[in-house]
Image (cartoon, rainbow, N blue to C red):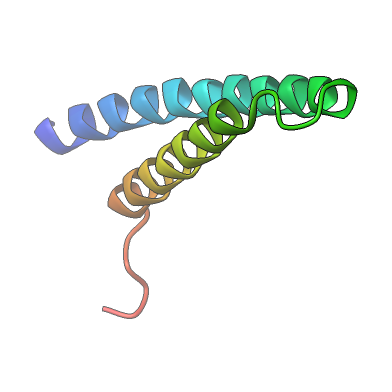
Length: 73
């Protein structure tokens, strides 16, 4: 029962993180489009968003690993 609750919480968090990942991706694409108009204008923000996107992706991978059993074990 407790394990099932943990899985539900993890799945809910995964959903939140996937939504956040898509939002960050949209922001990156918007900035890249603006970057073509004004070169080097938003490089720092773009770099920060890319790092944040990678961090969110890492969190997603770690949470998925908690749900999916290790087949090599």
